[in-house]
Length: 282
Image (tube, rainbow, N blue to C red):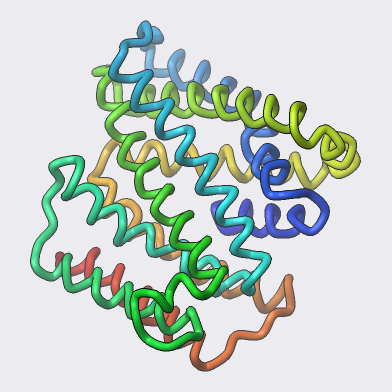
């Protein structure tokens, strides 16, 4: 679902600016998310809890990070093909592990740190510039992709923290967190569009079918991510999610008709290797 949603957003990005494309992910998923929350809470016979300060702080920061991440990812697509830009963003799995260790008291083993080195090497290869830390940021696609990955990493860790703070059935808490965040994100990005890019609204309306498609795919994918992040260590969830990469390759070839160079294949392979190390050894 993540690959499908992202492909839809890439298609919309040729007609809408980054923030308007970001809005479609949240606004068109909003009613579906609330329907899901009400259904899952009734099925599990769990009453929705009152908001607490810890939840609101973590969920709001996660929502803001996810908005920024989505906007950065869409900008990365404008400088690189779908599969390569997606693979750069997928360094979020490694960054989630690193940020988790530094700021969220998570644990990362020796092999886990080794995976970080492999992932960084992959990004440098994909940047198509001379090797070095500065080289990564000389490529707009790499800079935007890494910015998106970092924001997604923070979002995932904060989602887990917010969901667990509710101390109710984890499936319901994940749905509750999702509903809160999507409501906040829809309101915040829509307000921005109305104030700064009002001309984008008629374009969104004219492309309502693709926007609805993105919203449905976003809702289905987010339900999976939020639930998994609540049940398991965020770094491992992101690592396992790299199977999405193979769907990205298929979409790149079959839908967008984009070519992938040998160097790009090597860079993507290094990034995938880094997350496999994280998943299988770390």
